[in-house]
Structure formats: structure tokens, C-alpha cells
Image 1 (cartoon, rainbow, N blue to C red):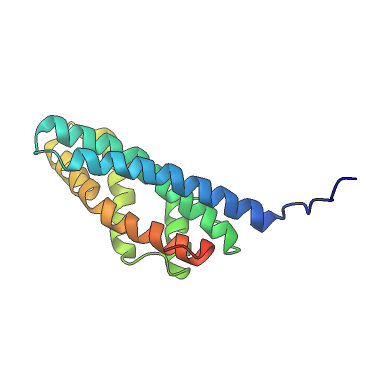
Image 2 (cartoon, rainbow, N blue to C red):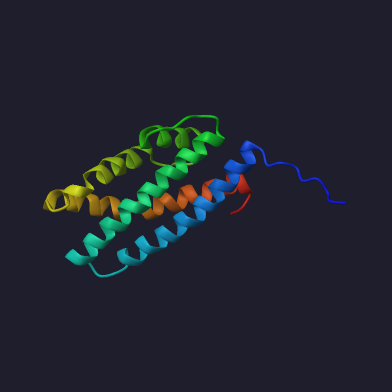
Amino acid sequence: MFAKRRAAGPVDTRLKDIDMHLETLEQALALLEEVLAEPFSALVRDAAIHRFEYTFELSWKLLKRIALVEGQKAESPWQAIRAAAEAGLLQNVDLWFEMVECRNSATMTFMPDISDQVFKAACSLPSSLRFVISAAKKKYFGKT
């Protein structure tokens, strides 16, 4: 009476998870880009830093999920970045490592030098992340 459904395998489930995570990440990225388009002020800088923090967090979690699909384990942002680079999803690994450091420093943004450094990372994240999103969609879903 009812057709049997094929159970989703671990790879299918992981790909579905990546697809959903990509959607959430694109929403966060749009919010970061929105604030970066505003004329610079201390308020814009602080908002951009906050949005950078959660967008970067979502970014490395996506890379962690991608590592699993690639058969690797990535428990830290560093490992996830290395795995994504090996999968051909990153253009500038050193920039991503710098963004990890900036994300880790984000709680110290009351110090002008640190806030400038983290804001600079926030400004560089969108183009790097757009590349990752595009490459992941192409590699895992055949989308451009």
C-alpha cells in the first residue's frame, strides 16, 4: 500500500545539514554587509564587530560540517579551515586564520587597536565568505 522510502544515509543527512547551514549563513552575511554599507562611525564599527562575531562563528561551523562530509574531523576553527582549504573551498587560508584571532579578540574591542583590527576583519569577511558559499554550493549541490 505504501511505497518504502529509502532511509537517508549519513552523507545525505550531512549534505542537508550543510544546505540549511548555508541558508542561515547567507542571512547572517547579508546583515553584516548591510551594516558595512553604512558610513563609518563608532556605532557602525561596533555593530559590524558584533555581526562579524556571529557570522564568523556560523562560518567555521559550516566548515566543520564540510570537513565531516570530506571524511575529516574538525573540532576547532583551525582544523575546519585546514579541511576546507584541502577541499578547495578557501582562497586565502592565512586571512581565515587571522579572522580566528580577531574573533577571539572581539571581547577586547574597548581597546582602539583591537577594535580597528577586528573591524578590518569584519570588512574582509564578506568577499571571502561569498567565495566559500559559492564553492560549497557548486561542489556539493551543483549550484552556481
